[in-house]
Length: 396
Image 1 (cartoon, rainbow, N blue to C red):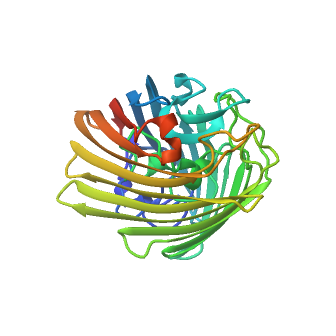
Image 2 (cartoon, rainbow, N blue to C red; image 1 turned 180 degrees about the vertical axis):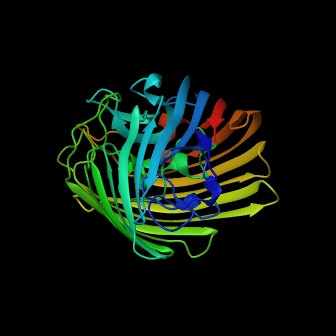
Image 3 (cartoon, rainbow, N blue to C red; image 1 turned 30 degrees about the vertical axis):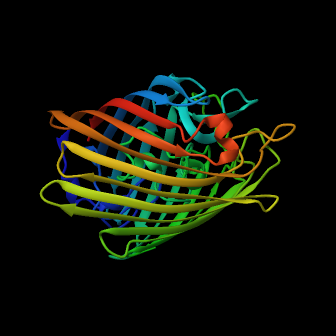
């Protein structure tokens, strides 16, 4: 295999810079980094990438806990370009998350999915699937500025929300999942998705059909595909520094423990990335999501996160979130309880050492503060804290 100049390559989905591509078919600013080791094998371009965290997690208070766990992703893609201007791209992504156990890791104010098929996970972040993505896409250029594409995945990511948090430059250096995950990007792993899209220059319009049910507690299997939900997304990159999107999804029975409850979701986000110096970058994301159930009960989630890296050694990152949630305290007879507004803020830093041409080893930590209303103080204590220390391996 021979190395390729991936900086000059265009996207597998159309005539724009490869750096614009993020998770699934989502977009990020053109000035973003596109991590990965790129090589050429005959007619195929090969990309590989990995980020693995070993994390010690401590969460304060009566509903906290501590745990050491491994998380991250290992990703590979194979692409072939044809003489007629079309492109076939195959992508796979695996995660070590299931090794942490079905109930995930302690994370105050997080909720969603289940570890045993009976009880919901509360104040814990669920592990992701061993197989996070197995997808194929095919695109056809119509002109120097226009293209159409199709994307299928089992599992894959439909056209909803901003890029998944582990793929955003403003979030990928933190080992902590956002508590807004189920408002903004929980559909990044669905078992069965088909997307059609049209792109004109800096504008993209796409629609997906997908399985609405979130993955079950068996994190090692491939679940049966079903196309019972749909989503639409409009994305716009008005300049190399900006990427904005607005999306809507009609989701059938997303929660395993509430099989008769459907949901509609709205999302809007803006990502800004700038470069400075020879290696420096600064990326920020502002995002909003809304979930509405069959009873017209709406819950909003807000997120602002930012990360700055002056060189290839240091990265400082931070996040502020606010959600309206009824999942922290069960209701009478089970199910969801009263609606509460809670918030979280965290800040962290990671120091990397380059140990090979495409490999870095990092040591980092973060500190978080959680804000709960008076009605929850007896359960959580007064604004409990949290912290993480982590070692990571990054191949890019």
